[in-house]
View 1 (cartoon, rainbow, N blue to C red):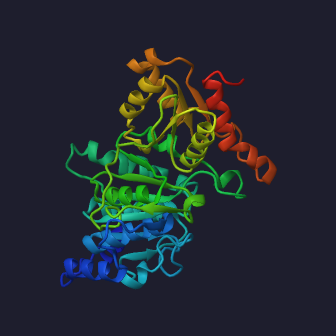
View 2 (cartoon, rainbow, N blue to C red):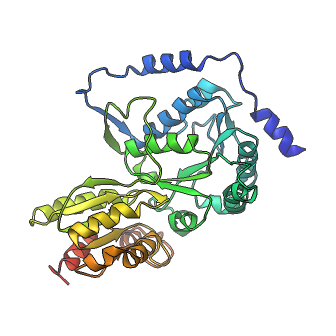
View 3 (cartoon, helix red, strand yellow):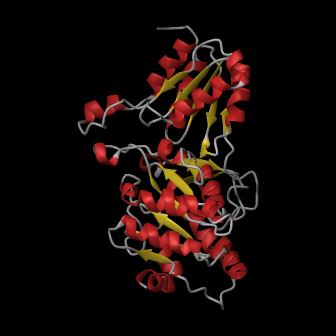
Length: 370
């Protein structure tokens, strides 16, 4: 009865609203440019905020819940202003109980709503992993395809800065191993906007892994990405930089280091191809295979632990595919250190890959250094 009461509070659909009119007003307020040549930039934080706002305008079944998402505008200000625009029935502050509000989100999704469940950090989502993996991830299959669960679990994932071992873990490999879940790890502002909107519209439960250190980073936005109809396909990687000598595959913040490494390698005449995974599950192994056939070398860069991670899975699939015959050097993995994340700054800096490490490993794969 408690769950039913909670759902009844969250579920009302405003019958007298006019989504088209509200969408037009939203576009006018933002002042979208009409000239394709005009360059836009947007931070990752704002891209996420805009994606949720546009989808809440488009579909009144979409609502947000989580700790401090409403009155405080979100712990990282990703939900800033949304309570003022949509009210407390659609932007809901919850108690500090991840298992509880994740369960409410799953229940709401099973009843036909489209909740966005924000975790202050995915480290705290371990309290709710049964709701995410069992209740959300498996119900559609166990119901014979009759009961979809369109919920998005989103929040910062992986290492930040100075937050210690219990707040620094990367869960891409954890959730990526679960059939029934879709797992997204975006990098740029366009990634975040297009993929979050696609995740909200998807009929499956989606785990959307952001990175705290990327929230304030600005990226260029195309005219297409500024549209409220901009979507990116889940399960499709993006070649951020083309090259012919070596393939660098990364996700989230590690794409930044891979791009910087490619710039450094270019100064030595090495043409590195950089692939931004975007999606962890489904994994776009086809794009990686195509690149490896061209470059004959592969380096996988991630911030998580080395054992049983995203890089391990990519390495296994490449070895099992026809791309194995094209390799001229062993596959290399660049990962976080195999230790709980240190709190001391000097040790923390040694625990995660940086650009210099990616450059060093790429040269090793090219037999340019040890």
